[in-house]
Length: 150
Image (cartoon, rainbow, N blue to C red; front, side, top):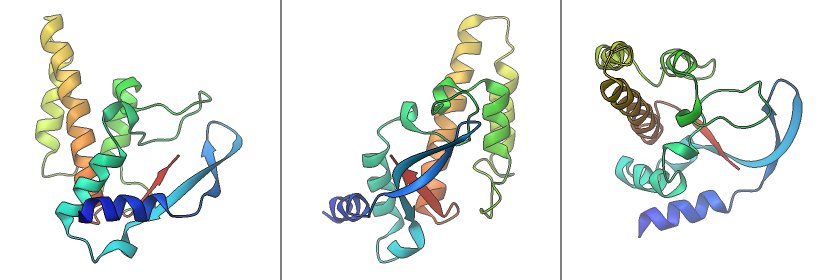
């Protein structure tokens, strides 16, 4: 029940113009959600609502793009995904992948070079899953503070 209230609250936010960095000044309309305004909800409720809004890793964009379109984590080049996930954004207190889970993340990176294509493919899949999961968890814990929906 609270999850649907939270999703409705986010959906009810006004759409504002924002610049989607595509290597230029393209202005689009979207909802900017500052999670600090939703402290009355529990971490679990925020996480459930985030899963409702971002239905899968194909819909999560964590870094700017210079190619003219949004690039979800499933389509990012592995080196760009690594950089975006382990670098702290200017306005945030922590990176998506912090020191606590960085060893596991690095293990997936190393397995992506495995000579067995099935192992390498699974490592990439696991890496993307980890970034997706950690992004939503950090948002729900206020460790990442702002997101946008389009």
